[in-house]
Image 1: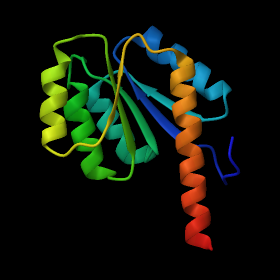
Image 2: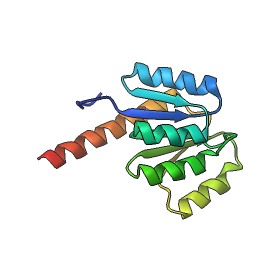
Image 3: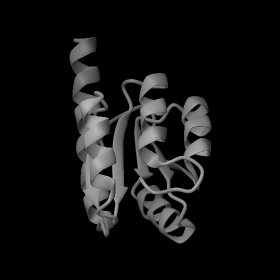
Image 4: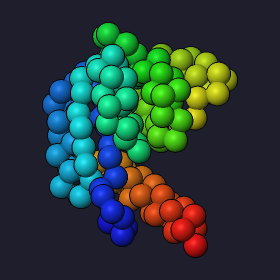
Length: 137
């Protein structure tokens, strides 16, 4: 992990609890601070309180889909990095609409190896560390 004052905060939102919880364990064991929620509404509420640097969000959730949750989170926390995930091909239209509306996100098609998430988080953490160093200098 890069030299930071605290671990990178990660919020995982996925209605498939076993997937969310397993990913959280893997990410937490790699030194990141992880909070897990199981729906879009709780993702928005938790993001507002937690202020994570990274939000990993499934697209298909029953109470609020991940694209709508990501839009709301990005309005509240414009510097948070959004990672949207889906194993469903019908999500493509929602992703295109979100992109056209200006939502900035990374999309990963499920199934995603935990190593891909870890590489992404480590890279983003390094990016934040460098940006902080440049601001201090």
